[in-house]
Amino acid sequence: MKELLEKIIRFRDERGWKEHDTPDALAKSIIIEAAELLENYQWPDNVPNMENIKEELADVLIYALAMCADLGLDPEQIIDEKLVKNLVKYPSTPK
Image (cartoon, rainbow, N blue to C red):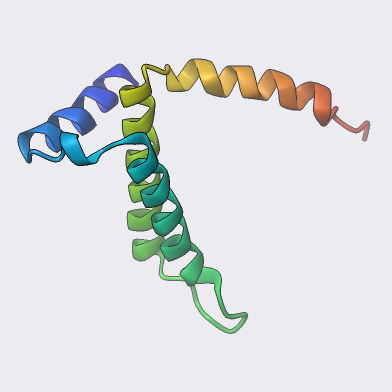
């Protein structure tokens, strides 16, 4: 994960985009890209475009990981912490 984060930040910084990647701008970008992902599933008779789905999902992940880096958050740690909370909130159901 660390190498992936470094790759994302290096890509951004080499293009001079760091000054624009504020937490609020990144949060907005995540929503915009998520909406573009959702367009693949907008209509019941629509056949999702897997290539577009991959690209839009990658955009969401890139922005989310960039936001983690900028806020000094470890994505693995915050996901683990959230899963622990979710285990309490949503216990597994016996089969």
